[in-house]
Image (tube, rainbow, N blue to C red; front, side):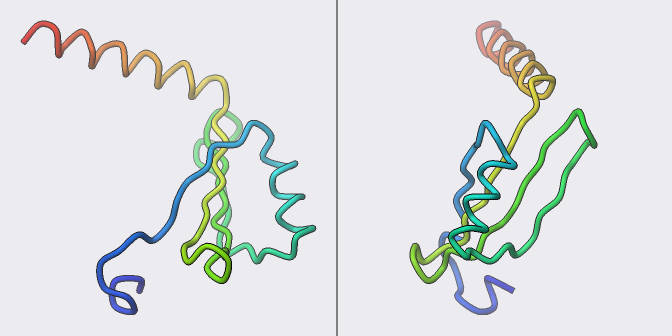
Length: 88
């Protein structure tokens, strides 16, 4: 939809938050419309929400919360990728 309506360009920016519920509460109190929200991986994964901030920023804002378990997984993946890069 975005590409059909606007062509190329920036659609959204993701902001990592430490407290998803607090961030969502702040968005709700500010009257910001939630376009979509959900989770990936149940309690071990990721929570996200896309907020309609087009009127103030020109783009959609995504709030992202990563659990400590996902942080550890990403750290292991980055370490392995770094080690592979050194062996080439």
